[in-house]
Length: 286
Image 1: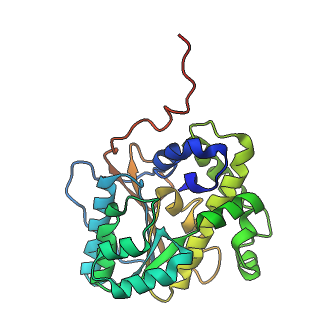
Image 2: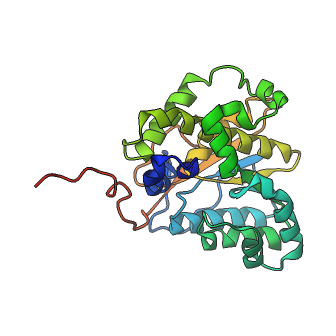
Image 3: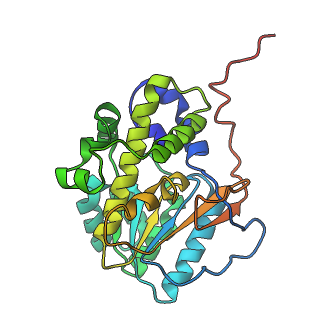
């Protein structure tokens, strides 16, 4: 969630980031007004499942497709953006001690998410004893990346492995900048853009690292559409180091889908919400 990077004056753009930047689109299938399709193809080593964070229809469709895979016998670990990585011990204890997803949410969940949208996935993990893995940076670590750069939260080996001692690939930095500016209604102060790009990239690399750490077990990542993009997101970073894993990225998008961002995408009806940019757009003079 881009809007939670720091406590700078960019607070006014939080709603815009949630609704616009999290919902990056891609070319693919339509699920609007249709039956739930069957999952596509064999189970990969890594399945990246996107979302528009507040879109209930997208959450439901994604869950149904994941449930079909699990009920057919797949047993991946589930990495979730919604849990900060620093809370892994608490999350693991909650999964062992809780009888239902509501208990896990009560013990580990924070105020940043609509947890009832994630209840089915968490319950699926409990029912089938699939490890729940915390995949996100805390606000404090994201703020460090804003202030000190992409390398701020990584150890020396990771900096070498992901070549973070070199400039970010131009397409990654440019693509992230475009999405962040658009996601903040094209009104983000220029001085804030670089720091927010660094925080977004840091989150993507951490998710990629955590996904790889689950090997040899297969992994599902539950995260925003922007994170699961194969061109500039987690999918790009997973195979920046060896050995190469089989990765499938799926977007669950509102509106027209753009090709090249995901291996497959499902178009869902837009979630009714106020215009996130209305509060920050200049008012027309009468």
